Length: 353
Image (tube, rainbow, N blue to C red; front, side, top):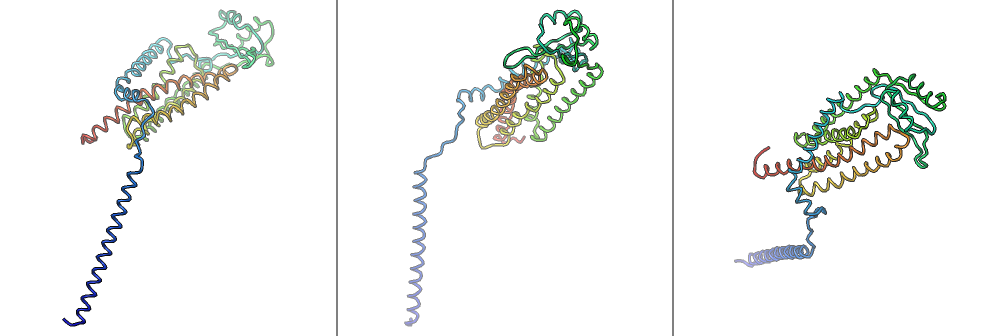
């Protein structure tokens, strides 16, 4: 081996040695870095899974008995349907109507008048009378009275003037007369509007969720809200006006908002347990409902002394919102929990839907 070859071999060995040392250094740096990361990871506090602030007893109760809970709204709904069937057979309609829907005369007389004596006097002379007083919200002083009857305006005015002892003019009174044919036509249009609103609501719900059981649960809850509210109104003898029917139109919208929120929460998110999703939806939904309920209740207290129309609208909405809480968080929540848990079991078992 020549001197030149020995020199070349020596250079190669030194290069190999340097490369090896460089690789070992890189391995050691990488190893030290991994050790440091592990050490830091151990020092970091372990993040616990956020648990629902809802008491465990309440969560376990609903998880265990949600199917049995469905028997409560089912029994109430069956009772309401039977009540409505009997009411229709006795009265020929689903609710009692005032003169705005049947036709008749509405008289407003300004001033202080003994309402009890007036009603006793008119009971035998006018056909189906109803009286109300309008008073100042602060002083409670009577400002006017409202008389509604199915008798014609001429007869009503003559009887009132004979009783009061003075002539009724535009300065001290106001008369409104609605013909029966016009009232019936208006009533039919309002009922058609409610039917169409409910049908279109159902179509939109099916388009949003595209699943039969969750969509049906939303529609059943909205239907139950309307039926239960209507039974409550009939049971306490409230005569429905055109404003009352409009309130039921509004109630359809109020009924489905929390149901859609609940359904969307349970179906669209998968990273949380169903109990947690239910509780999160409950917090948001109850905040929405209580806000609406508070606003409507305050409005009812303000207008009940001077506006029978607004008073009836807000009364129906207050009743409907209470039933909405029941039907959303008992009826709909139980159906959805049953559906979601059954679906998860099928997926775990490898059974395709």
